[in-house]
Amino acid sequence: MNKTDFLVIGSGVAGLRAALELARGGRVIVLTKDRIDESNTEYAQGGVAVALSDDDEIALHVEDTLNAGAGLCDEKAVIVLVEEGPRYIRELIEWGTEFDREGGELAFTREAAHSRRRILHAHGDSTGREIVRALLDRAKKDPNITFLAHAATLGLLVEDGRCIGVEYLDPNESLKREMRAKAVVLATGGAGQVYAQTTNPEVATGDGMAMAYTAGATVCDLEFVQFHPTVLAAPGAPRFLLTEALRGEGGRLRNDSGEAFMKQYDDREELAPRDIVSRSIVTEMTRTGRQWVYLDLTHLDANYLRRRFPKIHLTCLRYGLDITKDQLPVSPAAHYIMGGVRTDTLGRTTLAGLYAAGEVACTGVHGANRLASNSLLEGLVFGARAGAAALNETDGFPPGVEREPKPVDISPPDWMFDPQTRYRVQELMWQKVGLIRQGAELKTALDELTHLASQALNTRTHNFTTLARLITEAALWREESRGGHYRVDFPKRDDEKWRVHSAQQLNQPIKAVEQIGGG
Ligand code: FAD
Ligand code: SIN
Image 1 (cartoon, rainbow, N blue to C red):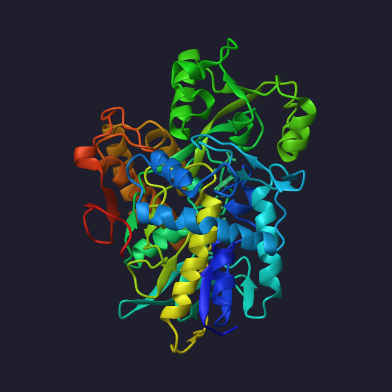
Image 2: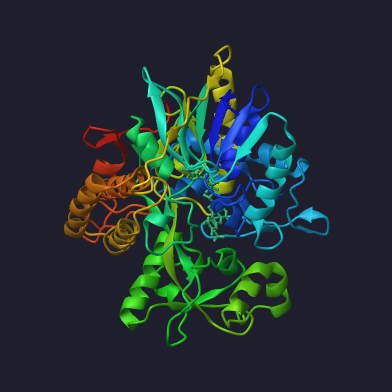
């Protein structure tokens, strides 16, 4: 265990796919902070978008992705994603992934802002779990891949301007260890947990973005956060996602008076882009003084609903709601972050030796707003590309060697969050850096987050507060509204001044860059 060629941090779709690529040429250790199968990927419901159906075209998927991205997508990255997508999906099927079929043919569903039915799904609404199962089966059989679970990475090691490994917590011995490698692939996923209301599991605290920033890499577009419109809001129930595919199959949003209100807000009604649907819901909630609106599926065929959405059906039943009979209380919650560690289309960050893929990365593929179901595809395509680049570019390098372990500070526990700070950050971010933002509120939040970051007691809390501060700083900087970023004090999109990306680097003021790719 004390010597390896490559380190992959995270075991979601991007990390697993990167590990399989790297294992073709060396020994790989995958460090992951919870169980191996715990990740955002595991909970993905709707499916994976891919231009594979008979009536679909690469050009249409590219166009839909660019439209959703609200003028900020890096077109080169989008073309890579959409053109290479079918190849990686076919490979996934060869590796045993069982996507749902009708009459033997792959079944495609529809989600918001897609001009075609192009979403593949598995076991109805458990797509992510099936993808993880297939990738894990393969990775576990690969003699070059070793998993180390419950091993939280705390920071990146940098020597002479190159990332040479990581510092992590040994789960068994309560030791802080340094693991060195020829290259590190960050695949730590998203950051929904910085918000009080989120669809993301506990592990999604944005560590990778904060660690990369602290190590000197550039992070981009962090102001763009996607809020999912339809998250279960029943009292006592967890913030469980009710997939967009439910609206794709005909689900309607209704207010307290039973009125299907989306037509007042957008011609595309329930299938308008997520940011529009989410803000419309908040407007209705404010107007009616209620904590939620309703998702109504009761007009759809009950047998079909039970068969197509089995997990959602069973989960709602647990909280006293039958999706075939009851209107489901829903409200928006933080779901996905478009920004992240700046990478080119090979997954190379601006720090030598450090690669990133999946939700932690920002290739520019999503621009200001991600098209639904493009992120599982992103994890596959860019996970493989980052793995391949790390392998090729370190050919001939000696393997990394593990250093002598250091005992962990025990007061305060270095591996635990300071719960008070964590809670305060989540509330601040939800109240002041959420779906609807305003300059003075952002400034107040930024001041408090800067203070909290400077006071953070240990690495984990510091990473968390640092990322929240960076998101807030970027949101304050962008004086316009676009995609996932909405400012009441600057409600219009301003292409003349703001068709640029935010870029943040340690000890430097935030700045605008024209393009993400190219390093
Ligand atoms: P993740 O899958 O989140 O994996 C991150 C990994 O990094 C985890 O293993 C985690 O434990 C590990 N990690 C984190 N920090 C550390 C650390 N410090 N040290 C060590 N390990 C660490 N997208 C779609 O395309 N289609 C969908 O239908 C869809 N549905 C979704 C439903 C839900 C409820 C959610 C939350 C997201 C959904 N998304 C969907 C988004 C998509 O699931 C994610 O963007 C994608 O799975 C991210 O993959 P990833 O590999 O980048 O990260
Ligand atoms: C969903 O199923 O609604 C989520 C899809 C996504 O986030 O891409």
